[in-house]
Length: 212
Ligand SMILES: O=C(O)c1ccccc1N[C@@H]1O[C@H](COP(=O)(O)O)[C@@H](O)[C@H]1O
Image 1: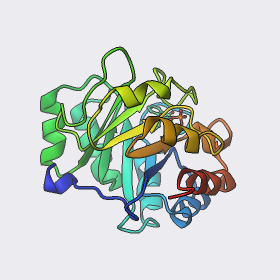
Image 2: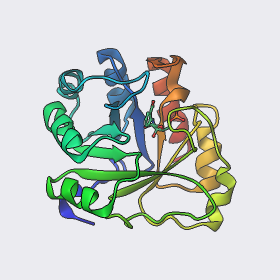
Image 3: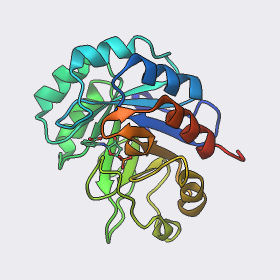
Image 4: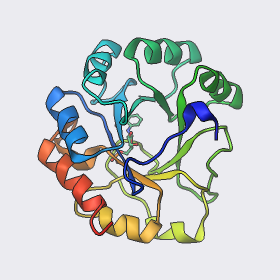
């Protein structure tokens, strides 16, 4: 792994990313609960924030928590300028970006997360030079789950995150079944679409790490 993108878990346990945060209250809840990464959606979504808001919220986040910008289909120039303006350290890409695109962001020193839908062929972490691979449902941010039970027979490589339809109620079973390096959640910690619930954020982190 590139040194610039090196990522470690805060507690040598499951890596936990909470995504789509928009308020100070939600950011504080995620940090206090022990999240390893916090995501800001900088692309079209009910959870979208502008770069200035992401920058303001990022200033509340301690250094050991990775700040992530989520993108889908933006040009390289747009991602670069939004990442610089918001001050996020990692970039999560949901589009069909090519290797040159990844390499350019890596050269900027960004940690890279490649998002892919789980399908017939399982992608491997690092194929595009990314630091983490996120395996998600076909529609990201929809709250829809996929068949995690297929994961023990597939091998996506070291630092892969399970996403798609996770909740405080199902995350422990999902982790025990699929054995990911980390998990990522958005819809499952919301009281309504795009509106996070701090109590659900706390419950998610607690449930994900239960017994660890
Ligand atoms: O949250 C969104 O609206 C979104 C938009 C565009 C790309 C990704 C998005 N979210 C990502 O979706 C997964 C899982 O979400 P969920 O828990 O099933 O709602 C997560 O990685 C988000 O970062």
